Amino acid sequence: MNASLDPEVWSVLRLILQVAFFVAVFALLKSMYEVREFTRLRHLAKPTGAFRVPTILLVLLFLGLLVYQATWQLTGVFRPEFIAFMQLHDRRAFNPAHWIQRGRILDRRGEVLAYSEEILGKVYRIYPDGPAFSPVVGYTQPMFGATGMEAVATVHLNGGTAASLENWSELGRQLVIQEKRPRGQDLTLTLDADLQRLAVERLGERRGAVVLLNPNDGAIRVLASVPSYDPNQITPALFQGGDPGSPLLNRATQGLYPPGSTFKIALASLALEQGFTGTLDCPADGFTTSARYRKIRDHEYYSARNNGTLWKGSGRLNLTQALAKSSNVFFAQLGVRYGHDAFDAMTDRFQLNRQIRLHESPYGVWAMRTGQAPRLDRSDRYGLAQMSIGQGQLLVTPAYMAVMAGAVANQGLAMTPRLIEGEPPRPLARFMSEAVAGKLAPMLRKVVTEGTGRGIDQPTLAIAGKTGTAQNPQGDSHSWFVGFAPAERPELAVAVLVEQGGYGSAVAAPIARDLLLRARALGLIRE
Image (cartoon, rainbow, N blue to C red):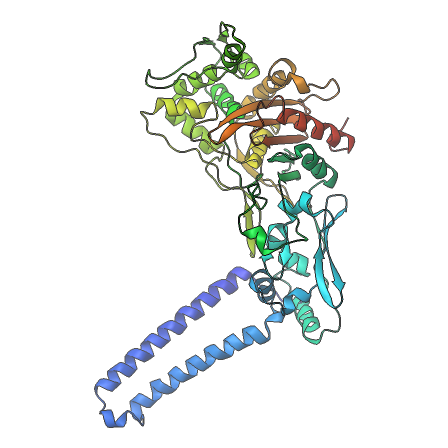
């Protein structure tokens, strides 16, 4: 018989029992204090009558607590929550929970990304191509705990679910008598190993991140972060913070960066929602909300100045032209024109200040770091202009930008990103109306055919997207590309960030192009 165990119900019951225990202890102590007030001191050495009863009850309560704790320790191997806890938090070398040969972690086509092997009586976790996949797979190690999918999917990898008492009882029996090493269940991810390796290869020695996902169901095909670490070689030095490359930082999901011009996708959707069909003047001298502030200018102005020439400005631009040229002057004016309330409503609709979860279980949650789109003082028009071009106080993760690109590709509906193959797709939120997405997608296609992204245009693959060069207070500008393909029937959305990489059109965009072309060769984009 396979009994059912609901972790939430048991959590509530445990809380009730704990509260009842402390209430009972308090009541008994109070009773003992009152009895003492009316009992002579010579009688205290030999409790009698009313004083003996609460004393006995108090002793029994503490004995019960000790029995419960002993039961938890001695028979814990029969409980899934105990084994999961021991694997994640018990750092002792002798730990029966680590005797389990956990299931393999596989990519979408069955390539092994992690497996367990018994060597000289000990079970070791092996990662064949460790650094490339550690941002997703993570590690499990007796002395240092677990991270990534190794942590949040630990119950599945151990061989059962929290709802299967029969399976876990058998697992506990094997651990106790050690007749054989218990084996866990395999876990298949949505990742494509070939594409993941290509992303890491194309980033090379540069720090950055790549996220590639299916906009229609949220399946993540690439989640790369460079530099990374080797999960086969976890040592104390890794956690001492001496590496300036911060290999433990998952830049794809935890790194916060100004999105630069890629955020103009969101501003364009706001303008379309508001019914904008006109033009705005974009002079060479730029735009500012007050003489106190530095003018916001277009990249052509700075290029001309560096070359010792004079740029005459863009003149009047419509929305399509402004996206293609990536005009800061246009979008700064646009943001100020619609104001703080409309901008804040748009960031709420885009889930910018909300935690987006990639996976959750009773034993862990893996979520993107929440973006930052703060509510500005209504008098701060210049701050609004800066955020409207993806600068100022606005910060996002590369994974979030892939979700945003996916929303445009999926007729305005963002899907919750997921990493486990077979999990049902779940809508995240509607970022924009279907009509707006239908107008915005062709505009992003023109960015690649006629604008700043034309260097990656492919005659056989219609790529749509937006380049970005985000100013960085700590050094050179960050390089961005956000987009999807094919433009008319998108099957993949991509976000590429290269820290201090310079122009997005020159650095990030070619990486995105190469990934999309390889994805088509692998059958992820149909001919």
